[in-house]
Length: 215
Image (cartoon, rainbow, N blue to C red; front, side):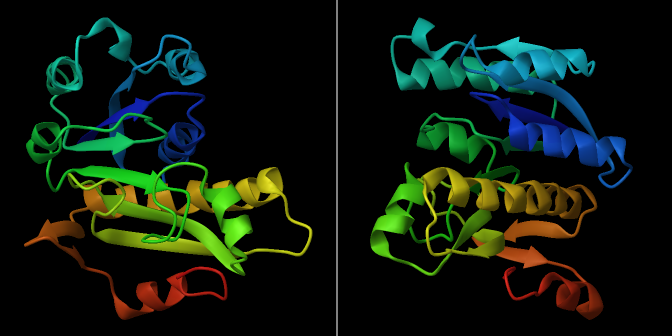
């Protein structure tokens, strides 16, 4: 069974969706560890309560980004993961770190990339007046939030939406598509080849992914 290490910075709601999918038998993987860069990350206690090994690599204890990334990589590699999963991990990673896990590190971003990279995506979507918003699972590359896209889910922007309402609607879709993308990877159906996503899915399974609000 493939081994996963999950990186978090906060409550870890996407981490929980992954753990729930494993518990339900929908994701054939083993979470080898959950690692946080903040001691106050609530997701650490959640993972610990579920019997998952946890580690803290506090970025504030390192002189620069490269030193932190080196310590983080050493901690990750101790668990020999097949896949590194960023689940609300709020750190910009160095190019050397990203290249170390090239093709086996995924991230989820709360927008329909390439729109609204970076922070405050829901606020910016509302300010821009878009009628469709959503989330994206992508492979991590050195350019922030620009890695090859695996899957996206879209939601309507409704009249009267505010940031919390829109964020909640998007988060519900994050919890659907992230475990799905990870399942494709651990089943050997998702690869990054020559900088492009290769996804081996039967036509009927591809068709089932398409709905008015999932792309």
